[in-house]
Image (tube, rainbow, N blue to C red; front, side, top):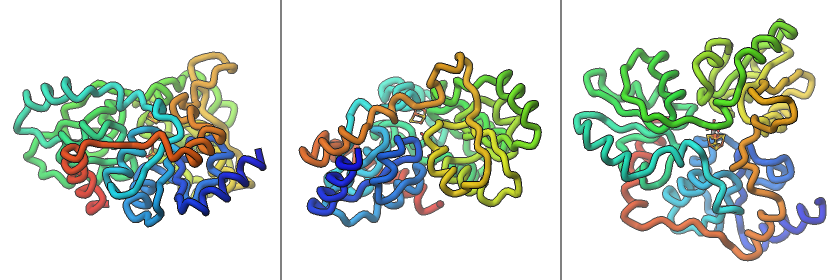
Length: 308
Ligand code: 13P
Ligand code: SF4
């Protein structure tokens, strides 16, 4: 493993590659990354990257966003099959019909969607700026929000805006069990529950903080509490624990029995250190996006970055 890490670091330098990793990546991948962050932070870094190659250790829509923002760079992803249940829930042909049926609506899409869907949108948002982006739209203009219905419901609750929601969800965040969570909290009454807004409403109602992965890491650092129950993908615990080595972090329980790895995103975990190395050697698989989609998808992402 160390040998592989060393080989990656050497090759990365020789080929002038920047490695960007999401918090849900396995620990060894986070260790070799130049930057580890949430969707918004990763997009901001990708937009400004001046390396020859961006190796994106995350899922497909994240690597696509990097390519849209920095199209002259070669963007590579260790496993092209690393998708996302939210992106999969929103096929462009069906979404186009949906928005055509509501032509007076502004279309806001969560960044967890394909480049084609972004190209059909007026604004993109991430979990860290979703409320702000929705609030940037004048009150009298109706909004379509896609693809995450749970994040959509959370924004409606926060802003009082009545949005038309697409029926998509994250399979990882929908797997948390409210009964098991409440039992765990009873056993640990001194713990604060913190949650990602892709979780269902009943989970979010128990949380003292709701936010993006980066937001959750900031929160545990700033809070006076010493114990947290963390309702998001388990990969976050690695960086979070490094930031608060003396605090206790408990992963939120999912529906299945304790042998299940439901709080792990199977898509994120398709990337391995070996695949990352192979991808550096072959400079593939490469992300490519048709020029007309790239140009259209850039507009709503840039609007988001300007508002963030
Ligand atoms: P963040 O933007 O909070 O990192 O979320 C990304 C994601 O895919 C959550 O499931
Ligand atoms: Fe998609 Fe959920 Fe995995 Fe995030 S955790 S990449 S939303 S499936």
